[in-house]
Length: 89
Image (cartoon, rainbow, N blue to C red; front, side, top):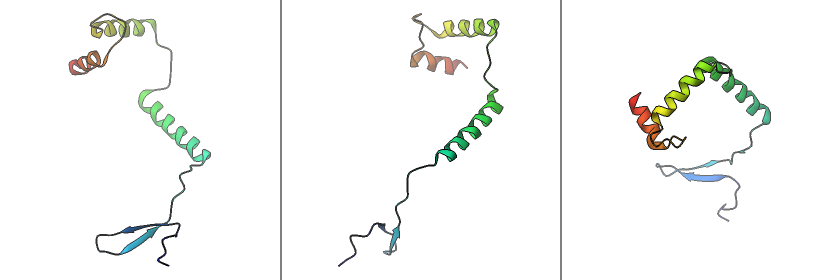
């Protein structure tokens, strides 16, 4: 027979040769995933700081900034409002 029932994937290269690549397993280990989450958390905390409660003055400042860009005063920023905010910054 011509070998069409093999479990690996055959690909043709530009030079005309055929190479076979075994199928890869798509499962990640849970331990590896947890390790990556710890790394990401560490990096994010070093860049942005750890989670904390905002002071009332900070909340007031954020609310005032929000109101400036909530043009239709519906309590939401739609994508156009956010785009305008980003252009202003």
